[in-house]
Length: 69
Image (cartoon, rainbow, N blue to C red; front, side, top):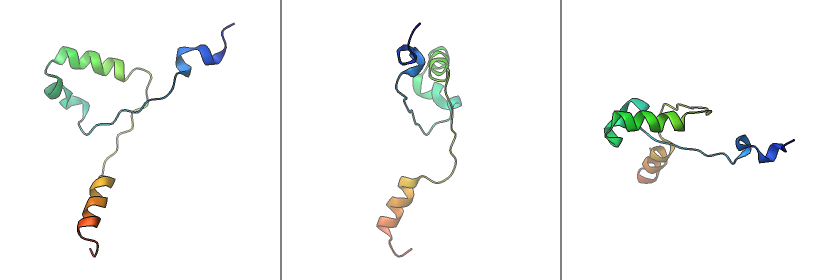
């Protein structure tokens, strides 16, 4: 019997963030085939969290520039 800590699913978690929707990745990577292959690998057995709204860093930057607003 293989201990649970030895299975591939027990590897450390990773987080990947970006500001482009998947549909626009082809513009960056240049090849529809390459983009499809990369997205297939990246999205296998993952949770995708799509966040919409203002950026926290942008809000902080605006507050620093204009603290009275």
